[in-house]
Length: 256
Image (cartoon, rainbow, N blue to C red; front, side, top):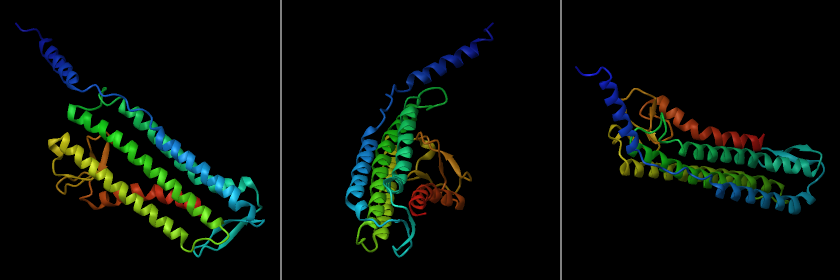
């Protein structure tokens, strides 16, 4: 008579075989390149502002400008006030970038652990996605930081460049579009290299596009947990908000 435990033994053996089929992927190192580049750019541009533009500022000094580029709020002139105005945006960006890089590094080390990838293809897709995200978000935050600093310093120039804010805003929008295109290409490339049959033909960049699927949030299998199904109205709305909100927060922090 077969042992009642035989079924459990077969189950456990099968689980071990599945686990053993998963690749042994290395943990991604913390990407210091763009963090240090952002810090260096901030120091250089803040130094230029302090030594070139600060001495010629009136007392009280302007700290806010209206849509026409005219100062409409002032504060007593001091190095502390000047630097705090310049550095608040970079501070937010650096914290965001550092936290993101730390999270990607941590997540890359647990891809094949319990609750993680269920197949070799899924594991490779997640690892490659983390690696690409680390690079793309690094340069994007670097560019965003530089543009915001230049926009602020332009207002402190004796003769600010007309339309400087609009030019900077266009630069931010352009960088965001490039980011989305590159991430979309990476996602499409990885989907072909490490296919997941249940999602074939249904991905649109980093998003999911399947009108027959009623879910708004869909498991990506890319290590990014979930993405939005843009085939539905709410999916489109959330997809736009996920990129628009961080940029608006930084801009409002600088402008208000």
